[in-house]
Amino acid sequence: MGEPVTDLRALVERGPVLVPACYDGISAAVLEQAGFAALGVSGAGLAMSRLGVPDLGLLTLTELVDAVRPIVRRAAVPVLVDADTGFGGPLNVLRTVEELVGAGVAAIQLEDQVASKRCGHLTGKAVVGADEFVERIAAAVLGRGDADTMIVARTDALAVHGIDEALARGRQAVAAGADLVFVEAPTSLEEVERIGAEFRGRALYNLATGGRSPALPVDRLGELGYGLVVCPTVALYPTVHALRSAAAALHRTGTDAHLHELDLSPAELFDVVGQTGWLDLDERIARASH
Picture (cartoon, rainbow, N blue to C red):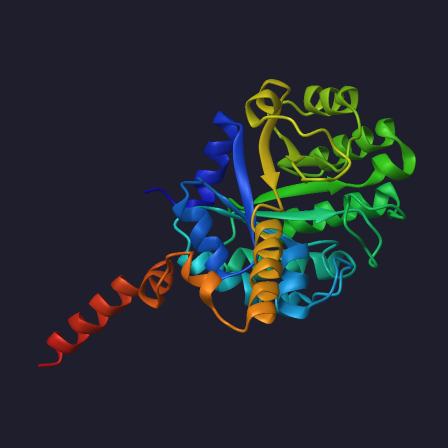
């Protein structure tokens, strides 16, 4: 097995690579066991799961790194992390990247929204000036140092200033050292095609279920020039749906009969996160001490 950080570059070059987003250790384990070659860590998912708040840039750098480190440590595949706006000015962005590189992430996504950011598929977004965005990317590249970590430049300028400005910001980001360009929330096939053609092989697409962008198959997106496709809701949507259903049934009936229909046991649940391996390791340590 190669190094996960380097492996992501190779995956993107072969493209398109489909990256499902997790938000904690168990969601990461389930997604990896499904056979995906890379994982993403959703900023929205972390905000909701760790803090119980919406995706408004409320997570701190410390909280982000603390959440990401165990996911990366347990994953055998490269991990892409959403770092929002980088937690401040250029020096803060530099430190953000240093911390995430130190945690072993394979790619770091930074965007051009103002600090009180919001989900890219909601209305009311605002972006910083193009020069400030380029400063963020340049700071990220400097913070990366000699690491092979990829820098993803996300721009939300399309919704604010239009497609031409978004493409221009993408070009400026590439010139500043970005490896991938993520033009968020195109609303038409024509816009999707223009973005893919402009950044062929290094364009990222957000397959945001129920959002503003066309729901296109990954293979088709690859043909259009996208090297990486993120699905941010694959863990969040089913989790919320299943919990609502299970909680309603428990509240209504006062029994766990509906949970028995899932045909799961505590042992099977713990094996999702490697219980067998941990118990084997415990036995090896015990034998070695005698």
